[in-house]
Length: 378
View 1 (tube, rainbow, N blue to C red):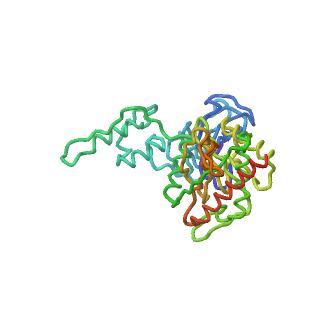
View 2: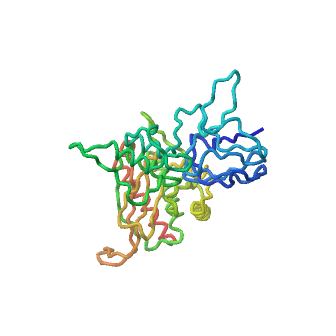
View 3: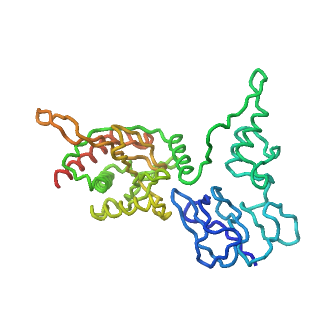
């Protein structure tokens, strides 16, 4: 009998996932535990093995489409086995339940073939999907179909028709970029953020261990400033007693934030190895879901591209983020003389609902002190 494979819950709080890549095609023979599909969620990609052996009879969720947990992704059975009914058919009433083959649990209410992205676009432009003739494969409604339909019904104040522009290359939001859009939008909309900036003298600090030193200094400073290692939850502030710091890593697909655990107790060598491992995994797209969840505070640095000052967005639901900006030779005054030192700006962007400005400034200065003392010690 055909086996309906549903999107599993890949971690606490997960409600949906995006099909990043199918590793099989319809008609393929597959063994149990063979690679089946890659699911994009929480800024990482998880490869899911096949729970059953047989022939891939039907792939129900195409690449790039988001499906909720519990949705049927693929049907696996015996070669030549017939599905109980067409995928897009509405279940008919019956005396006893009939297994449903559908991408989304529950009876479909719309017979139009269109991706969720196209459906949202139609809603935003005020287009009735049922009235649009799809020109895509199998009669699927495309983005261009929606733009043309919108142009036909939209009118300017003087009554003349206004055409919607379809010029240029359009790409639907997928994978990491879609998650970045959601996270950045939420952070900007919900958090009243303020940024404090101060200079740091990096002259005596070994640049090859900059990242682990920053992680260590930040975690130790957070012990004395617990309101920055916290969450804003409704009408409560939750103070966390662990120091698991997110480390922003730029990849070809976008910004990924793996989590370095226990930064307050780990040695410098341990932090160096773990930060390097997580950064390599982020760029290779092999991070596990638990490696990008539940950070308590985030550190970011754009290296040589960092600029003099950047105001990074807070990684929701955290209440602060520390930024290390471009480091380079600058003239400064030391003991009444102008000398050249390796200087760089350090910033802390904080949620003003939870953190007062004076405390954020004191935290930033504490991190700077620890970094400068670490450089002197080496």
